[in-house]
Length: 468
Figure 1 (cartoon, rainbow, N blue to C red):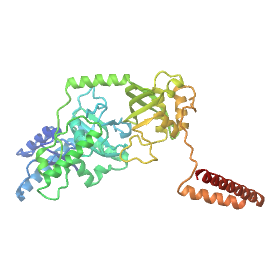
Figure 2 (cartoon, rainbow, N blue to C red):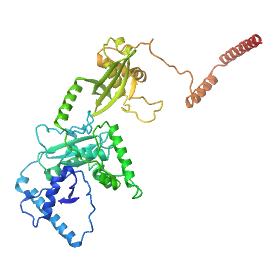
Figure 3 (spheres, rainbow, N blue to C red):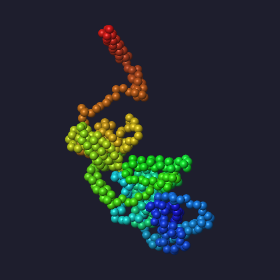
């Protein structure tokens, strides 16, 4: 790796990184030159968030060699600084890009591929990118630079699949360090400081370096790396990614895990994706819900609708706040024909609107308790019984007519006894009420209990006589 400093901002470049190989070679040539040109255009210093270690470890560095390298780095810094102070650069007013104004997108798209779209990318051939990474809750984790956005995002999600779910990006027509730094620093100011992935050294290393498998001995490095690689690949598959992630075998021998870069998506695959997206749009409907009193719209894509004996089984993908989740919903006939409808879409959308309004987790994983609603696989009847008011409101909102509840076909369970703490509270309440009752009412209750006990005794005696 080569460390180039422009002012006080470090850039880590690597000759083994796919997204900055050409710039790294140019920088190495610049370092080896016997002199530094006074022209700022001869300096090609690129920056990239992906920092790949060299395949071989360098040997000891002598004092004289260290001094020569330091001198060259200072020369490089002076030349780049001179370019920034030139009249041409000073005369250019750069627009401040607000991070909040950029659209966020999932790193893994609906087709399971990492094929990032850049705003304005259809009309421009961008050479550099400034990006921000967000976790599943849309909390920013890291910002970085890239010259190959697809492979950079693959590296980010491959190293930290639990933290890398969404991204925001700005594309630049040329590799301009000053402009890239200006955008990132502006984002830091808007955020009130760097995100945790840039601020803390430990977090920054987890983004910029291969994953350490944590082997406790030299002999166990390979095995630990293979296990870590399998875990990362499993996480990526659970996130819906269908791309292949091939580990770097040389790093595996050192107990580290990182995935190799890949080429771009072929034209044939790109055309197939566009056709798939157009087809998915035809199967997508918009619905409405209310979250914390604020009306919001969401999209429901219908992947399959299967007719069953008692209704329908529907597989859907729900998209809201740039997050897509998959669900299987069982719809009874009462929610379709019983409401004068011809298809189950409105029932599904009303159930999802009720769950979103209740702010339930949209994915249920692991062991479930009695108090958890199974949002991955549920029935519309279950959603209505859990959230009757929200369901009825959403149904009327989506259809324009009130929901007709079918009392005869609904299972209703009434709790007749209390248990646990509720039982103790109920017994105490009954005791207080008994003590507060008038004396004549207590006497009447005692007579009724005595008569009831005598009747039960006569019945027991008659039963015993008949049994003999």
